[in-house]
Every structure is written in structure tokens, then in C-alpha cells.
Image (tube, rainbow, N blue to C red; front, side):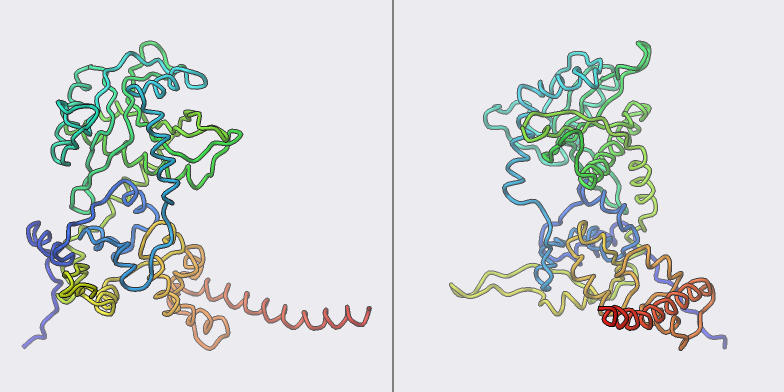
Length: 420
């Protein structure tokens, strides 16, 4: 009788995947992807742990707090209030300030008159007390508005709601505004107008310079919106090239609150987002082999008596154990992009993983996964494996240089004392 060969577990179908993801999350509403989390995929696309948590809609910030590693990044309430006030200023009077920025120096866009449409409120609602639409209704209204644009109507869409497929699940994203039918000053009169996504940010541009990290993050986030808008036009049977490769970044100038407009070429960021969405493993394949015990239920039952804490469905120990059963791929960049970063960093350091030192170190080590293995190869107590000979040569050269530096340092110190 021939020995049986283990077979890989087949990925569940869409219904089975959705049911398993709901079970992973427990009886709490899901947290959805947004432009920030999709943009973060370009930072660390190979992390299965984040992919599963995001697909299941687990609140990663709350999970990190429950296991004792609270996230330490995010905007302060003051920064959020300032940002909302600046956005309100830019969008006042049906985005009059935005249109003026497009037409003025240095952009000098040819912008026709637009019909302003706020896609985030009921069309019949009292403007003084707008009623927010649910996501499905908002998306349908957005689709109808851009169908009118495809037919040639000039619309300026505020609060459009777009969507992308992320790992087999639908994610909704909301750009600040889409300024439609604009033509750059250097374009010929016969050139078609393009649709421009405008991203309003409250960080300042001082003397023509802004924080490169913040500009880069804004560009990647805007690229998500461009990609989502292009996919909507593709669904409508319209050439997606109608959406410009450039986006409008609206920021305060210097130390005043006066808005300024800057054109950013986001082709590189669009390509990066597309590449990572295409590479993102289908979530069904990721959860197919998960232990049934893996569970991130963050629900808390009401207290039985006043003053007593509620009963947590899962303890910190149980949640941590579930995390260890999904592979993570920590990198230092995670600290500013993922709420789970401090837990994963602690885990990577405890395991002596080379990932904890960053991608450049990991890549230079050429397949040597742990720091202990790297040290053993460097001092000659372990041999290099297949494909590790170049990394081993560099490690041993570095070890010799380090040992030589230690030998020279005492002599140099002794000599300087004698000279004194």
C-alpha cells in the first residue's frame, strides 16, 4: 500500500470565506478597508497576519490595546479639528476656493463652470441638517453622477464614494473631492479635459517645501482614489484615461491658513497600489489552513452588576495565541502604518528575526532568517547554506573588521594618554 500524500486544504468558496471571516471577528461590526489601509499595503504587502485581520474587519487598534501593545500613532484631536476646519474652508460656497486655485497661478487650468453635487447627503435633505446616506446608496449615487460625467456633463463631485476589490472583498474609499473637466494650461485646445482628484491636507507648505513623508503618504492615498475612480469608469464602459495621472494636493501656505494647490504626479504610486492589490493573496487561501481555534472576538458582555467590568469573550492570552498562529512579516516601517506593529516588533525581536532590523539588512543577509544564525556564520561556528555564500563572506569580513577595531581602540586610547 503506497503512503498517502498530504493534500493542501482547498480554499473555501465565497460564502464559506465570508462566514469564516465573520467567525474570526466575532459578534462585532466589521472595520472596513479605507484609502489609508489600502495605501499601507504598499509598505508591507507580504504580511499574512495583517491581510487576515483586515479582511475579517478586526479592529486592530482595539486588539493591540487588549493584548498590551497599544498603537502610538495617529492624529491628535487638535490636528483633526484643524484639518476639518481647513477642509471646510476649501469647500465653502460649493468649492469656490478650490476652483479659484485651479484657475489661478501657477496651475492656470482651463476649468468650465461646474454643477456642484454633494454625494454624501440625501438630495432632498435640508442643507442645514443633511442626512447621510448608507454606503450602498452613496455608491449608487456616485455611479449615477459619473455616468452623467461620461455623457459630457461638467460636475464637481463632493464626497463621492468609490470601491475597490481588496483580497476578494469590497472596500469603499472616499476622496475629498473630484474636480471635473479641467485642462492644464500647457495643453492644446483640442486636448480632452481630464478629471482630477483633489486631496485636502492640513500640513503646511513652508517656503515651497513640505514634509516629504507626509507628501508621499498623501500621494499614495490619492493614488488609491485615482485607481478606484478609473475602475468605476471602466465599469461604465468609458476609457479610464479620462482620470488624470496627476492629483491636486491642497495645503495651507506657510504659517497662514491660506490654501495653495500643488500638482502631484502619482503614476508611480498608482502602479505600486495596482501591483500590491494584484499580489495580495486571495483571502480564502490564507484562511483555509487556519486552526479553527483562531479567534479575534473582541466583544465584551455587559457587567452583571454596577461597577463591575464586563466579561471579555476572549482574554489577552487567547488573543495573543491566535495571533501567533498567523504568520507576520514585521518591518520597521510597520510602526507608522499598522496598529499591530509594536506587538509584531516585540515578537520579531524575541525570535531574533532579521526582519526586525529592516528590509535592507534582511536583503543583505540573503536568506539568513535569524540574527543568531548570522552571528554563528560570522564567527565561523556555522557554515553557509545553499545560496548564502556571498552573505557569509560579507558577514565574516565585517566580523574581522569589528575585531580589528576592538584591538586598535585600546592601543589608540593608551597612546593618547601617554602623549598627554
